[in-house]
Image (tube, rainbow, N blue to C red; front, side, top):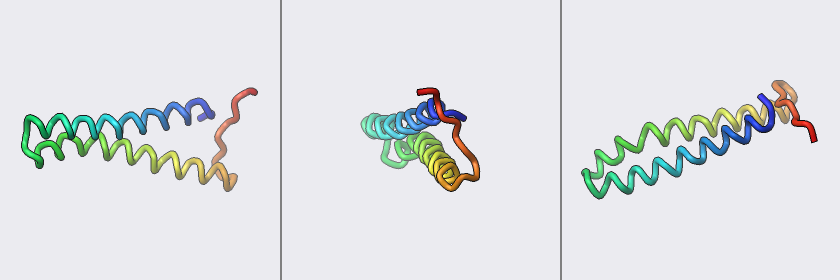
Length: 73
C-alpha cells in the first residue's frame, strides 16, 4: 500500500461513518429507533473497522515492521 491508497482508505472510512449517521437520521423519520439502529450498524462497524486497520497499519509503519511506500515528491 502506498500513501495515496492509505489516504483513499481514510476518506472511504470517514465517508462510511458520515453515511451511517445520515442513514440513521433518515431512517428514524420512517422507522422505529431500533430499526434505524439496525440499518446504520453495518456501515458504522465497517467504517470503524477500517479506521482500526489503518491505525494499526500506521503504527506498524511508525515502528518499522510493515512500511507504507512513500509517494514520489
